[in-house]
Image (tube, rainbow, N blue to C red; front, side):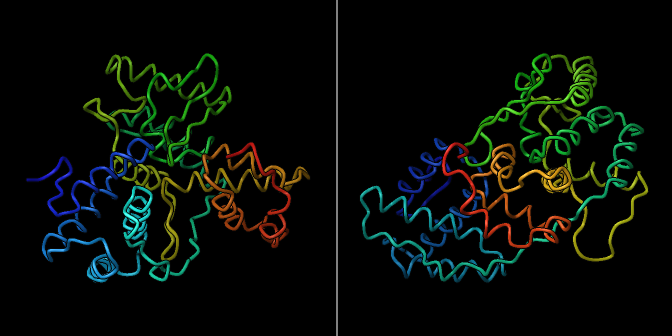
Length: 318
């Protein structure tokens, strides 16, 4: 008999309880469920009955044959082991860190001011009968002006956009963190135009941005429209290396603020906690990543990350 998530092995009850716990913590990702199903199926095939080293590493070895160098999924089975240990299964094996892939710094595509201007000019001339004709400008404005994640914009409920008080609420985002972000008059104007057109077409709806059927937009759709607008703007694509994508706006928001503070002579190390909080980062290490993507900043402050560990406040920004 299968469980609600389709588990069939001897570990099915524990895996279901673990997922219930993660959901209560605000972790709803389908990737975790998919990989745990692969683990569960492996255990059922091999008759595994003990959450020990042989079982876990045996599955990991099999999974690596299909996953190549990408190993982020290992964090799921490692987390299950830790969860089991804290819930009385003291013999449960926690996957060793030796399985972690070496850290490879990402190299995001860095948008220029000219590219951004051309992109948003193109959003005003989209020829399509679907809602992206009027909501593309608002969607990507939130990513560009507020540094939001694509998923945060897609999940934005209509009541979380307070145009009168000029703020947007990002609720239960990555890592179960929420935050309220102020909006400028220009952003409010763009959102108001979008909301008016969407209400005229669909009436009331659950999410601020919708598909042609009135449902929440998908991540794939966002990528498709970003690429269409990019091409319509006549913007070139690099022959190799990093490619422009919706997330490039979030990168730009981060390093543009860093470089603006530099130009203004502000204490950047004192400002980073505010940037971290605004962007919804769990740790400052995530914010340091954007420091390293800012070429101008790195030329002037190559050792910022090392220095700032002793300069950042210890409380108040978690």
